[in-house]
Image (cartoon, rainbow, N blue to C red; front, side):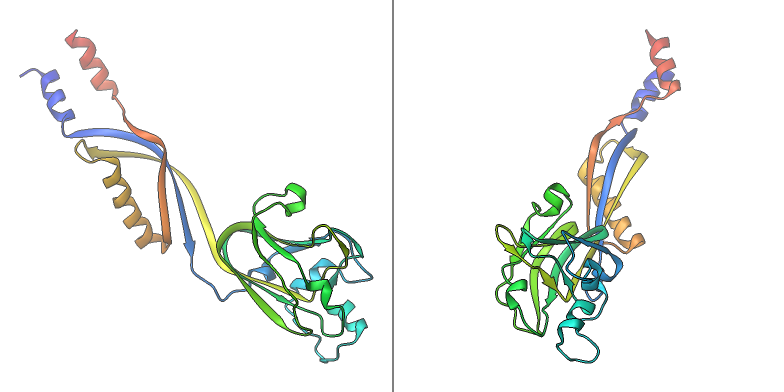
Amino acid sequence: MTRFNQMIKQWKYFVFVTGVFSIQGSSENLEENLALKGTAVQSSTFYTSGATKAIDGIRYSPSGTPHPDETHTYCSITSNQLNPWWRLDLLDYYYIYKVTITNRGDCCLDQTTGVEIRIGNSLENNGNNNPRCAVTSLVPARSTVSFYCGGMEGRYVNMYIPNIQAHLTLCEVEVYGTAVNRKKVFLRMKLTSSVDTAAVNKTFLNQLQSSLGLSDVKLSWTRLPYRDVTHEEKKNNKDSC
């Protein structure tokens, strides 16, 4: 048997494959208020009630007195305008399961009524075109209401009142979810020729879950594995001609 034939026989059992795959997973921590790590902006500002007042970690004023001046101190309020909005940038990508809104305690319940909660990764129309999680109904004064979003993925959380002129008031916005971890890895492996892509995926998913502590891991090839011919193999092919 020639060396070339021996090499052919070896190829039957071993091949080199090269591919690119992406890893997506989530780390579980549903008790952390993600909003506290983000930044906030809004369409306009009424008096001194800036956007960050809604993510300062204070649901109600410390004194408990529902005085208008304290609403200005502890709540975000836009000017009376058409289509007011407020946007939270989480600074990373998350699966969002719950958004909690706290209303002011003194008056003006309509300022937190009919608010669309939108979640996504786009800044088109200031983020107000992202998918909708829920729409608030009348939120009682000095109350906290939660809305469940089923793990919608997004970096931005918007509060949006469309098609009317109004103030938008938010005394506190809380967001709970899990981080989305994405990585792209270039991989070179030596595998038996009988091992298919599904078996490769299963092997690596098991290793990733055990070593990185990720859950809900997904692996997808952006370029399917292909056989890489070595310099020695090319030389033998040429000699056999």
